[in-house]
Image (cartoon, rainbow, N blue to C red; front, side, top):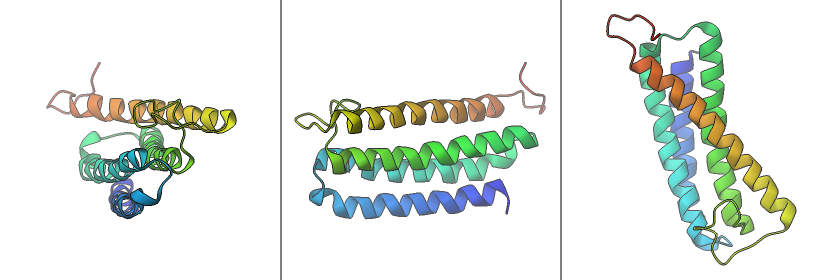
Amino acid sequence: MSHARSLLRLGVTLFLLGLLTGLAVQGMKNPRAGLSAHLEGLMNGMFLMIAGLAWKDLALGPRAARITYGLLVFGTFANWATTTATALLGTSRATPIAGAGHAADETVESVVLGMLVLVSLAMIGAAGTIAVRLWRRESGDPVG
């Protein structure tokens, strides 16, 4: 299966997970963070679908395609999962606005913070690669 088709499938799946998360928001330890998790699932699902639709225009080599695909899939799903964990566990250090008034065990807080750092790096890497490739000269020449 191509990366483009896989991103479309995974995007729809993540979008569905976001919808289902929305149904569970009121039962979470921190409903405000649950709303964030719901929105992360929806937005990251759409982002994966858009990336899948734009994939052919990126004209990535095989290695760059594997790395970018991996960063996209890890970053989007880990973003939703970590934000959902924040809502379920009631952490606040990594998300002080959504987590206001909540706190969890120091180890749990550290794991959530570490995951969100990894998510940030993955998403910056993937989005940066996509942006550079889409902004390359119209002639198809690589940037640089």
